[in-house]
Length: 298
Image (cartoon, rainbow, N blue to C red):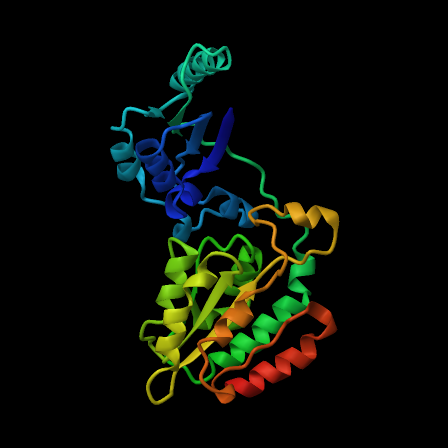
């Protein structure tokens, strides 16, 4: 028996609903599986990390889940009473399955009307303000925006990995006023958007090391095609595997190689002068990397 609990953003946008429907329709189940989707119409964890309701994190997905609810194996619970009744039904069904009196199967439960307010997980932001990462962002992005008449797009997704850095940079740093954050519905969409024609011929892409990085190829082709004049500043955020607990990092599958993005991007570069690849390792090499990047930006 398997019970999965997931938010509506990750489940809908990263394919969880489509996969579940595919399994319901296309395969004969050999176990009892229940998927609970918390449909609160927002990326709640990311909002909590910055203690604000970011407009970029609102998910207009009610109609989608209304449509899914028409399926016979999907239940929508609008309040705690309906949720209790649904759980009681699934519990009885599970008991019967465990006793060999009922067949296995897959069920989906969409939970609404139970929004939970949690205290923000901010902690002390002073280390972020004083971090080598923030200093790097200020100097490099400041250099990147020099002479621009329009705000430069920063493409990304829910920004789970770096949202506190991005939020402080955009809200508190003078360099952040020259940028506009454009939030894709997925990391894949963010990777696609950086390949579009940009207002000043340049943009920034913040991305994690797992999902969208596999979709960056066509955008890199677009940026590197033509007769020049385009610039893309690509920042790949990935966790460091420094201790045992890091292997269970929230939102990250286990990986042997923690940053494959740089190697993947190299396949799309024609010659060495077209791209600069550097590994930012924090305070230990911050000054060296910053000088190399700012020099490459011209």
